[in-house]
Image (tube, rainbow over all chains, first blue to last red; front, side, top):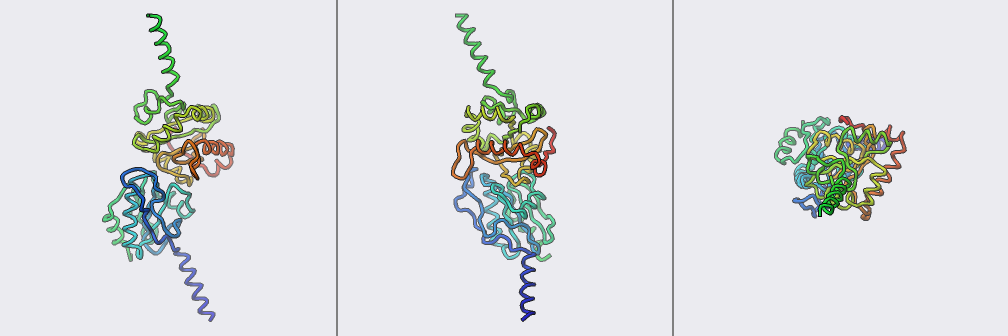
Amino acid sequence: MIMRKTAIVLVFLLLSSFGFGIDNLKLNPKLDYASDSLDGPLITGDDSQSGFVAGKPNYVIIYGEGCFNSKRQARRTVELYNKYRDRVHFVVIDLDVPRSPEQQKLVKQFYKGYIPHVVVLNVRGESLYNQSGEVDSERIEEIFNSSINR
Amino acid sequence: MLAVALIWWLVASTGAQTNENHLAGAASPYLKRASGQPVDWYPWGPDAFKRAQGLNRPVLLDLGAVWCPWCGLMDRDTYNNTDTAEYINQCFVAVKVDFDASPELVAEIERAQAVLNRPAGLPLTAFITPDGKLYFGAGYLPAVREAAKRSFRETAEEALRLFSDKQKIEEEAVQLEVQK
């Protein structure tokens, strides 16, 4: 009985240290991709304030709501999420709303001043991609595929 | 006839002087567009910060672009409003920056605002101490409060309150590295 309890605590601690992260990502269906209209948050999900999670590659998007380049990158982000959700942790940072300390760590470390900004980190948190502007999904998938399970 | 023409010229030239701020002659389309606004805009530079130091006022920074519809909306509804302009001119030193004309400066300001956990993007409305510390900011601000979206005036008043809390500014504000 004691061993079982210990095992449960250990599993809990392990999961806590790795974090759960954002899940159930969904694209705002009202987005107008051709204008800088304010259509609300581009992406919604559970635990949307999560930051870096160790143990998997991380994909980070930093965006602004009234930015059509951000909207287009948000669409790619959700497509990537639907394909890689089990193997990659996704972090969604909306610059139009207050952010958690975990997300602010990423902003301070990587944000260069232009949106959208995309960062891909390996399992140890080292940067594999760190650029402002839209980026093709193929390019990101190449990075994912080369870093998953490494 | 000559007297009438002279009077008309005098009136016209006086009007032109009073309707132009420090952006007159600016090369940037975004700044040029604002040169006739009632806000006494300065371009980014030592003149504006010296004035802020002399008056011990915060700098109100508007960062925008000609292609940004929300920037155009703020120009039209907020900065062209004479009451708002008078308030700005009495309480702040107003500085306008063109997103397209100053990429390094823009990146520095956008990053500072994001690091401060304030909205970033365009338009960007920032409040900066006379010695260059960005201490408060927002994005698009309507002339009148829209539901949960605070108005420009409410935000500016909060910026003035925060400006008096020197200790908080010292602890939290982000020093801009760009040359003033």
